[in-house]
Length: 123
Image (cartoon, rainbow, N blue to C red; front, top):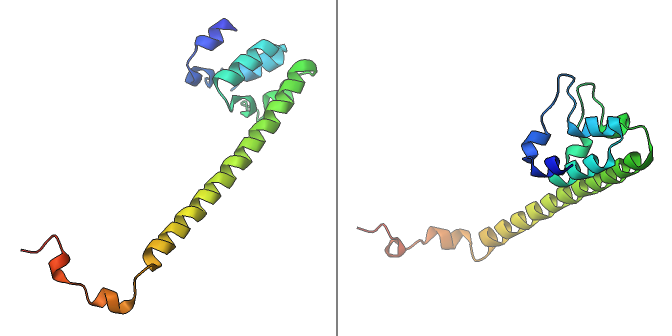
C-alpha cells in the first residue's frame, strides 16, 4: 500500500497481459487497503474496464471491497453528472454573455456610421 502512494497515477493505469489494472488485481485479491490507495491516488480508476470488459466491482467477491467499490461508483457517477451540468451552465453563461455584448448598443445605423478617426490603423 505504501508503494502505491509513491506511484505516479499514470503507472496505476498500466495493464497486465490480461488487460487488468492494479484496481482489478486488488479487487480480485479482496485487498481493501489497495483499492482505497488507488482510488485516492488515481481518481476514476475504480470504474475502468479490464481486458474482458469488467469493472473491479464485477470482479470483487463481496464484503468491504464490494461495499467500497459500490459507493465509489456512485460517487463517480454523481461527479460525472455534476461536471456535465457545470459544463452546460458555463456554456449557457457564455452564450448569454455573447448575446449581451453583441446585442447591446448596436444597431444597423450605428455600425454603418463608423468613424475612421477612431481606428488605430489610421495613417
